[in-house]
Length: 152
Image (cartoon, rainbow, N blue to C red):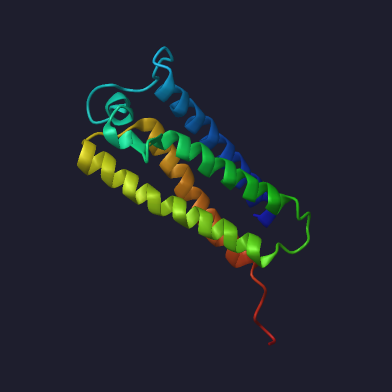
């Protein structure tokens, strides 16, 4: 698959993640919004989203997610804006670094959900999968975009 196609997939995944993060943020601030997720058993979004761990530094984790996905979408748009020109090294590094940070937080969130809270949130799991997928795409496209070292 062409690198630009992967950039479009990165943008789409970022926008899907952004939509979910916005939904979870609105849920945090407005109890009248219905929670579309299981509220019993192992998958218990209500318990996860209302736990003390649902906020970090006084800010809902979902709102942090909004910021993360806005930046991820911006990086994908910047990559798409290159229009066939080689992507600058700093943009490749920024994308890789950003998704690496996101993937590291996913590990922490999974630990928190599974060990500390004892439940998982289906919406959060989709967000986690999107972030890990974005990291994988970034690693693969970064390798494809790296200048060839052959002939040097």
